Length: 112
Image (tube, rainbow, N blue to C red):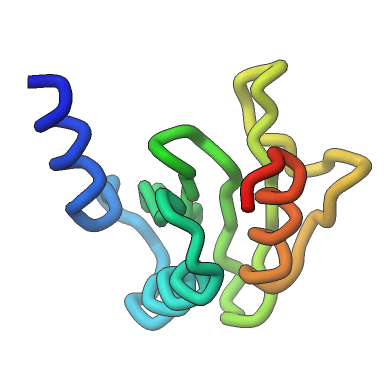
């Protein structure tokens, strides 16, 4: 039962909340940037308002906030110590390109 629930979650697209405000083109851009990295278990998990939540193997990694520009998004890494996203963490960029910020988040958690 548990395994089938996990597999179901991993195989479907991102979870969406009502009223997410990100255009389909921007969502596609995020998904394509994730694919470029070729990291197993890395996926766009949820769309919520202007936010795209990224998870690795089902665990929170980071989130991006859509700013109206495909090439620059607000970035927040997930901090397990607080259980929250940190949009103004001193050691991480506050905004940038999806692929660059994903590489930083993956590196922070030693994920290849």
